[in-house]
Length: 280
Image (cartoon, rainbow, N blue to C red; front, side, top):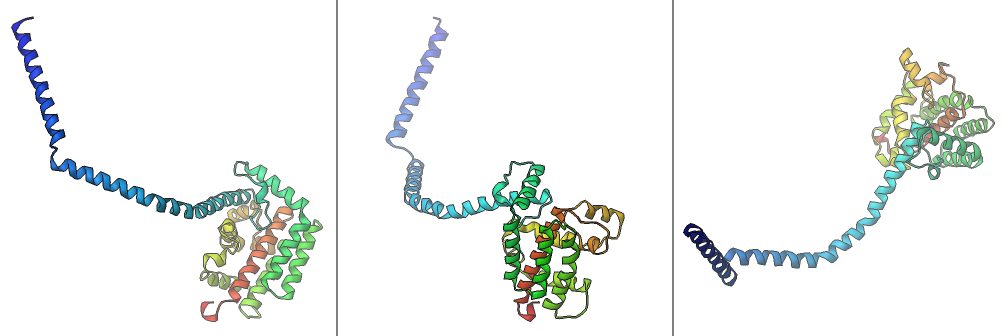
């Protein structure tokens, strides 16, 4: 070993000794910030221990809310699938048979079979809901006739019968007028703007497609070929197209959608009738 190498080793050994001594001094007599940091860490640890039961209790209290949000998200996804398949989501819809992983065509087939095979139960539910709305006898009889026609396969009846009846109900029951058609419907929409979300969607957000169709499709005027093609391709009947013979609605699907929308509108009228005059 050369003299130069020996000097390097001596310097390395001396440096290591210096580090060892400095560390020993640090451990024996650490600077103030070490004690302060340790105190903070101990405080945080103790606070976490004290807060753990409260955090656990809070999370447990939030569990029902989290489950409700998950249920809402799941059922809304099913409702959107039904709507995409052309079947308006409703209290009578087969949510229990629909899965979010299904294709739209499969959901449509499930809905069609459900309404066909369980029509007796569905029609009783529809009639009971309309009766609960408290509309006048004429409206209930007219709705019942549309339901009976559907049950007999007379699918053209509901759209052509119910749209004029809805206008009569709005005009007489809500506006207390003897005349007026389109103006009555505009007044209905104006009054609806003052309703809360729970009043517009009494069965919950899952059925938001009903309000969307009412606001954007049901009473849209058809004034161009483009609009005509749009409403013709939609299985939810359009009032202007049905009443003026622009589109023939003659399927079980279009008939049922007309019944569902009519029940929904009658329910809105019932809500609006309960409001004081200054709110309507």
